[in-house]
Length: 74
Image (cartoon, one colour):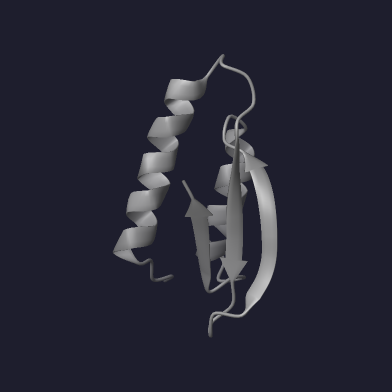
């Protein structure tokens, strides 16, 4: 079973709410960083918060343990 940090889950929930508010308002971007276990930056990506599949894909990486952490700058 994957372990999630409480802060990360709170950020995810905030992002979900933000996406719901943005529907129909065009594409809005946020920067996302995915980090390896010791804080080494593996990827930096700009995602469109309106496109929920992109957000879920990043957080889905945590569920499969492909990444040790993900951070979305809101």
